[in-house]
Amino acid sequence: MRWYSSEMTRLYKALPANRDKLDNMTMQAWMDSNLEHQGTRDLVRWMILGLNNREPADHSFLSIVTSLRGQIVQSLRDGIEYRLEGGTQAPAEKMRAELGASVRLSTPVTNILQDARGVQVIVSSGEIIRAKHVIFTGTPWTSNKITWSPPLPSPKKRLFDKLSTMGNCVKMSVFYDTPFWRQQNSSGQVIGTVEVDGLFFPACLDNSPLNSSVGVMQCITAGNTSTTLMKLSKSARQDAMVKYLARALGDQALTPFHYEDKDWVASPYIGGGVYPILAPGVLTHDYAALASDFGHVTWAGADTLPLDAHNFGFIDGAIQTGEMAAQRVLKSFDEAVLSV
Ligand SMILES: Cc1cc2nc3c(=O)[nH]c(=O)nc-3n(C[C@H](O)[C@H](O)[C@H](O)COP(=O)(O)OP(=O)(O)OC[C@H]3O[C@@H](n4cnc5c(N)ncnc54)[C@H](O)[C@@H]3O)c2cc1C
Image (spheres, rainbow, N blue to C red):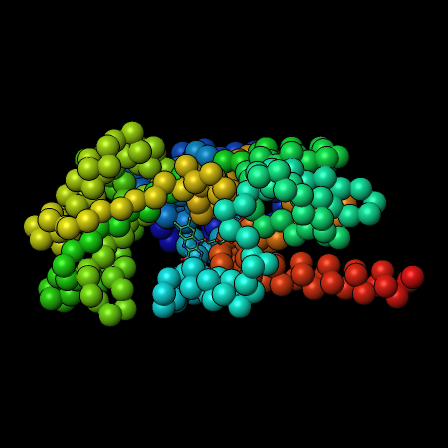
């Protein structure tokens, strides 16, 4: 692992040297050629799955070197340091209450038409909303589901096609009467770096509410395990999860009173989680088209930051890009008024 760590730092610091070479191979190909010890390979696979939610064979090696910024695993402070009271949705719900009817929920956009005067946004009911400018915050996969008129410029369309594979993550939660593991002096954090019964659970943690009224354990699965699990019935998925947890937390884990899961790949307006996956060649050939405007449309969101930004793919990054895009658009309005 020490060699792997220093090699990742060396390759990152040497960039842009070898950029094309590193982008032409997958993370798996690099691991096959460079990591002899099975234990190291397991640990690296665990890190990639935990971080990017797809198998090492899906990623360009350059994208991993770049996104890790010379480290081997992202710092815990990068987006997962805090929990929000009321859930991550709480701030958005508070803002919605303040903004009132101007926020429209369950209103999918189907078409975006634009000409020199501005934009027409058509939603699924057929209603047309007119705007001077649009800030689009969906993932590349959702950008591709919109009918654009005129069509997206080909570099952007090609990039969105290539970024339409998102992380393959399933979030699984089991509910118990109490967070019983705390009585065993356990934090509830369960880390697994190898497959157990053909399934790989990179990380499980105590996700009980702040008042501990119930005990909630949450596992996030990734890669091939997510695909295997989603072929099973919901009760078989619960069974697999509690059997895995019981190995670490004991037999009490076998009898939850409830189970829920969410397959992010099946989420119709997200397309997967946590990030879009960069296959070989995307970073060096297509990526430059990511954040550019298209007429009166500006893209914002966690995935539009540079890949080596510390908050790429995180909520903090989504907020930052949203604020920056709004400021830029408002400034362009001011400049247009001044020039009249
Ligand atoms: C399992 C999981 C765990 C995560 N954990 C963390 C974490 O601990 N910390 C962290 O910082 N980040 C975490 N993230 C990442 C975080 O969720 C994202 O960084 C953040 O949601 C990105 O925000 P965004 O606004 O860029 O995009 P999104 O959250 O994807 O928002 C885009 C919005 O656009 C909407 N939309 C898309 N298409 C259309 C359409 N055609 N019409 C109308 N609306 C549309 C979508 O419904 C969505 O509401 C996690 C993600 C997942 C999946």
